Length: 182
Image 1: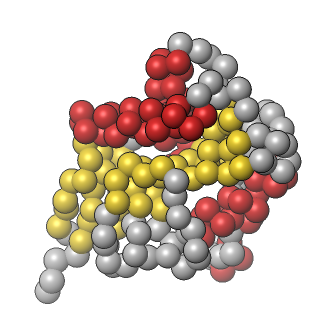
Image 2: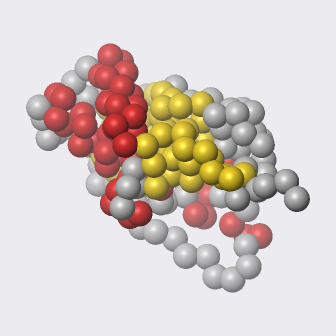
């Protein structure tokens, strides 16, 4: 396997900080905006965004939840074995709010489509925006585009983008994995 590092260390943190400043430009005080991390990996990113926004804005009033999309995916019945879902941790109604959906990697768009369906169980938002750390822009199966992008990467379907989080893997890093030609 060949590995290429896309983000790590200080560049990783600067990317999150830049995205937070872009959010502040559009949502100022977050009084009518909520953050929703798509489980499992988007939740780590959403936690970081909330933490950074809280530090920049000097507030603890930013609402953040985690959304499980397991049973809204168009492929969940195709998997072998028992499907296990995570629990949703959204303790607020999103009716009339601006929602920022957050995920680590946008690839085909199917995860985001499922998240939009799952989100409606919590009310009808005024607006939904999408923030991703990595946008694999040439691989969409559905017409979904992010509003906030950490980094775009042009990749083949055979390649894998792996995001590591300090909380789970011990370091913040994004790598692009490719199989070597035989």
